[in-house]
Length: 298
Image (cartoon, rainbow, N blue to C red; front, top):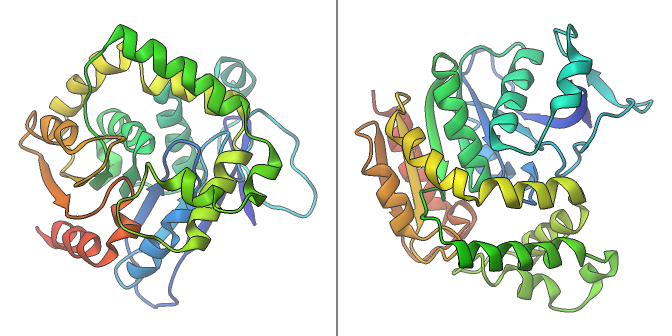
């Protein structure tokens, strides 16, 4: 397992590559809320002919730390290139999505990657959008999977926060041992079936997510400020971007993605039929076909 110190926090990352004498472009994959890089592996493996694929776990999720920590012996570690002012940066870290965009910039710096392709999902797609606008020179093309804009509703948001607190608080380790718990947990996220092993892994990712990160990002990713910010961010995108939606997604409905894409001629929009919040797993053939078409279009 490989780790890199990103702004004082140990981040897990892994390369998925095919041995080749050719120098390939790099595609970076970013996961969504309470998930991990794990669910991107099958997509990355399918793209090995065209890309070297970099997967990483965002701060507080998967195998990455939620707070500054001491590196444990036996781990493969790549230290960040710059340590100047690191203590101050650590103290200022928050769960704002703009901070996660800066985490990504520091990760690329630490791995000495200059210009990459990015495929990001759900909350990770919001992070990627912010990154695209802050570092457009570092992104060749971007894919945003299940993303969009939403309107602020005070009562609905208050109810969502209350429910979110309960969901994040009640995550006993034994939850994953209950029969059918994985199926019930994923019912809201998928329309077409995915393997049981994938469902169980999603549940484990959720159970193991850092409490502060899981709760903090609920409040920062779904907020009045975010509802006001994201339309502006989509409107000013200069990076060629493909926005992919799942036809039956109830987490981020198709219309949210359609409205975001309508704000900018640099955004192409595509709906994967008979899928919901994980089109890359529910219908990988259709998803990959459209991704390749977009990436190969000069």
